[in-house]
Image (cartoon, rainbow, N blue to C red; front, side):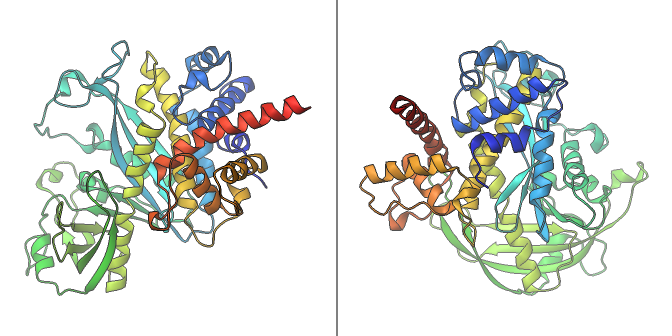
Length: 458
């Protein structure tokens, strides 16, 4: 079955319950337009009455972040069928609306008074080949002005702190799936929380967190996690690809890998809460053997509730944690590609569902980029319709490409990226997300011209 942008939008948003079927149709239309013209203003992707249609949709109380994204979350769980284990990657990003002075309800996002906006915490579902399967949950909130620049730690339960986002993210990750689905919830150093490790988890749901604190361990031989690792022998050497970031070039890093099994001591403050309990975890230490010419050496200490007993299982944890870069790409596409921070809405209530729509569009761009690299390469009908393929084929011919065959998702992705500025030389590898979203914008214009020309011929 061919997937046009219209059918994609219907699949991801068509089951929304917004109190009126016309609102759902408007949402599908809006999502389809945003996916066709990635980065365009939402008010300009729905035709002449687009601004009014968007306002009516986002002004209704039924259009919330949860209601517009719920069908997509359901589709995400369906895409997980057949995957033995999926990764639920958590991360937080800032949505900066500092230049939009009229927005009501935003708050501070840094220690600087003029930096204002929202925070967004995402849970992105990824398979073990790093193909993003969809979004499992989004949280968007504004900090209070009294919290700006405050670094002082306050003794409150995690449920009353901003760190509660990790606990909510864990719930969002595990409540969506049947009991048979294995899930590994991945987080960076900010998620190194005692409350996360003792939070309720169903069978088959595990944690993988990068160590932020050299925690005490209950052992007669060692007093801390790092002491336990220092006494462990090296299991082997593992190579991992470090992606390009800014001026830092892509490289292959050789990591020495060690592992240990420890019992983390419950923090002192937990005694009064009645939840004091030591936690059994596996610890994996992956350290780059040779410092790179530019940048810092990779040095990860990972805590996991999965049992690590060998070099292979330790490497599996390193590989799973390295997939965390996918969520950073997701946030980059949302902000740079979909231009979410350029939205001109005057209230947070309008912004939240709009962010939800664009987040799913950002996932589509990222999915197309990663899906095209998977093996075996899927047929092009899984990502595009006949008209889009024909328009791209004709454009390739106009550029001197005599073969111009688009049979697979990989062919389509490369052709779209070439339309967005990707050169496609042998040394260039596969295209990234930027040329993909730029190519999708240009493809929409070409398809529109193709349709107009066909109508004129009739």
